[in-house]
Length: 355
Image 1 (cartoon, one colour):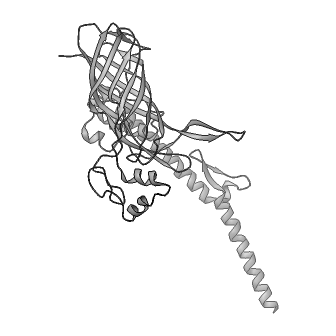
Image 2: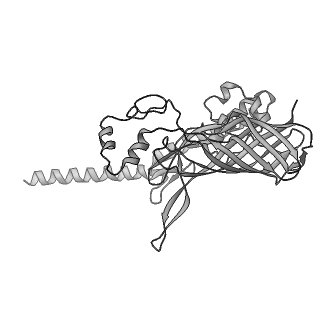
């Protein structure tokens, strides 16, 4: 029995030594890329720490040398396009803090550089901020390459107050759609008259199906659009501070060929779901809800937008600024009440004389 106790004590002593060696190894680490040894552990006692320190110094020196090579290469004329693509990819990791590209820089990128990078979902930026563009009466002008990029998506919801009441306010949402929610390539006529300037939207990628998620988890689909926009502004000169505002048409989120899970549609599919005819014919309550679910309609609503010019380049005719748009969301083809959507973002456009 005494031999067993002595053997157990020997094992405990050996285990304690292993734990001490383990703690010594754990106390050797790195802070800010530099090797450090914790207090109470001498460098002479930790050969592993010394080895790690020397390796870390070599890695840091190599990284600095590689960074110097990259800076030297990017400064060359022959790789400006590749450098722009690399910076664009880095900017996408933090789009809110990244500096945007101008239209000229966008045109220097090839299809392969833009493909899969998300740059196609961003609006160009204007470098100039001073000057003005005169819109003369009797002449025809056009706004081309109009682009609208939302930065904020809010939905009007009923929110409880501290006193137990309920009020409506716009709440922030989470974007569920990938990088396909920006409108681009839009163009239309711009004229000047006694009542000011008028822009009429005519063509382009002027709608984008988008979905956002409320804090409670409910998802709200809507069709972001400025179809048939008629925006007016005071004066006959486009300059910093000019504001265009007007109404536009919001088509239905779903089209007539869409079929719901029960096979009902607007122009095709079943008229009503199985077992519903008997429920609708009994004269009981809730008939209107069943009727809305079966009677699919293509609803068209209205929206409003305000666009404020903050940057302008008279030499190229480019303008840029911010916009605020308010419109209704999806009605599920008449089955539910739509929610009010508030969008805020940036826009870009170019003013040219019509041929």
